[in-house]
Amino acid sequence: TFLFVCGCVCIAGVQAESSVNLSSPSICAVTGSTVIISCTFTTPNSSSVSDREWFLIHKPDEEEQVLKKEPDFSGRFHYSKWRHICELTLKDVRVSDSGVYNFRFKTPSSDWITASPGVHLTVTDLQMKVEDKTVGQRKVKVTCSSTCSLSENLYYFWYKNEERMPNATHDSYIHLDSTSPSDQGSYSCQVSVSLHRSPSMCKCYSAQTSHFT
Image (cartoon, rainbow, N blue to C red; front, top):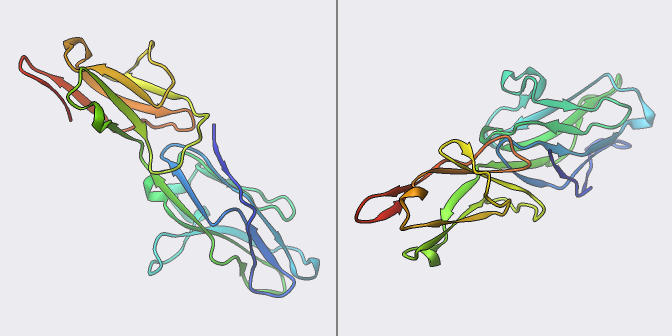
């Protein structure tokens, strides 16, 4: 499973007769998913390529990180080296992967040629929350969501006390009985494009009341 984002927005390099074309300027992804950034480039006068690389800048005032030199990205990324295709695949993304990604290349007769401004990637965790209008009711609605705009075609998986709930639907929400001790436990959710689950939410019960934390 992967998250494929391609808006084919042309972001040209700065040297004549050359360009780097990246996908849409911004991407939002949930932790554990795979992100693909489409990328093509042209060389000046059809020159050969002597070197190529992807790099990341977390913040404007920080130094760039070349992915192939960073241990944190070892085994988690790949980019095409076929002709003038430079598509980047980044697996099992983490919140710490957020930042601006860019590609650059050089030819025997040129310095680095890159795109501007690059692709801004934001990685966020899934979140579980109780829908406000169901608080205090017997049937409480718990949703699994993200600050990213998730596809409507995703499957959702629900866990109780670290085990998959076999009877739960694949919807983005479940209903819990606030009066039932049998619903007590620790809940988390997962989407089909991600390897990670959300932080857990506890449905706690006592003789006087039940509550979520």
